[in-house]
Length: 166
Picture 1: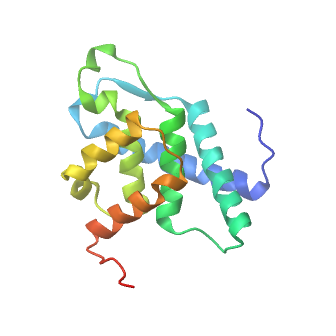
Picture 2: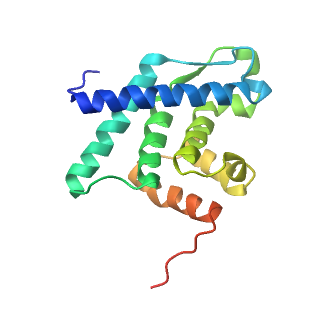
């Protein structure tokens, strides 16, 4: 895929690429299911996912004529593109029976989104919502915009922020 990127977009992609790879290495070293090279990151797919994330953010900002995006919207765009393009591939097929490996792209997208929202992944991973959200990411059709409210509610519930009363 060819992109017509500005220097600012290329700089953002490079920065976020490094951040995503670093987060992947942290996640990969945590559960035993990801050890022994059970999963690998495909650099070209990751680049496409991050470039699409940046481009969608810029389109949103330009269309709505706003200065930037709220964290939950940026996390939604990331989640959408990461799950859609699936840059993490299963390498060791002996590990496929572990659901954490089968849902590795969905799990990582939620793990990284939690970091973007400044919430603890462990607080999300232990909830019923976690399983439902992973199921939605894996088996349901969605857009980045359609998960804005879900990601915002996730953030509000973990941070104990009440819903606004009108």
